[in-house]
Image 1 (spheres, rainbow, N blue to C red):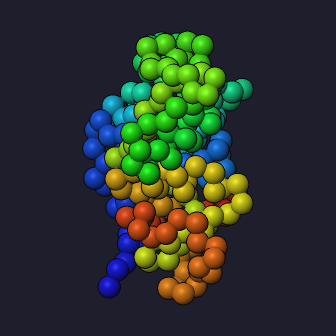
Image 2 (cartoon, rainbow, N blue to C red; image 1 turned 180 degrees about the vertical axis):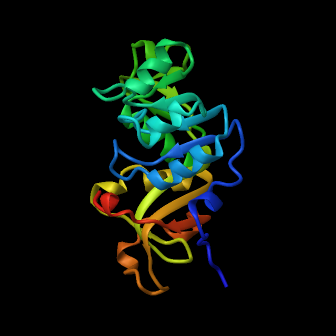
Image 3 (cartoon, one colour; image 1 turned 90 degrees about the vertical axis):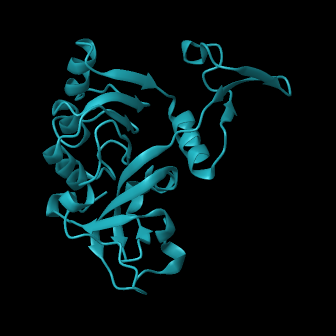
Length: 227
């Protein structure tokens, strides 16, 4: 019997080692796997590389993971906003490495990693500092930059509903990066608001098939049910 559910978030993250590369779902706080991140902070792995849309908000979630000293490098599109004081402080003190990636490139590189491609040519970033040291090519009169795919050892994502096979349904904007990150990671951990029986998900609404999910855990604090 296939059952990918685990008893707790601590069980889900128990084998994430020092130096691992993690993809973290979420667009700001929408779709961010807060419970899995809290469990990871309790474990305190070191020298992690994070691939995410941003570098945390306030003092919770991603920001709390940075503050705990678990992260060595962040690969993201929006590291700074009005409440990114944790990232700002660590970066200015030289305690955190940043690879800045335009958002479209970030999504496309993750998709390339999930599809098994060797990379992509994109016009975004051509002629800027982001293209320095990278291969460029002119195709049909337009200039492109070669970007390598992004892959991860683990993806930590959040969905609305899941079944024990790992099939996932998302809630509105909570969908964001989760589906493509699940495809680009060796091991995907999904926190869901609720586990439903097999057959309880409309197949036409399943966005992430269970083949891309290795573990899932149900956790639905009342203040996190909305996307």
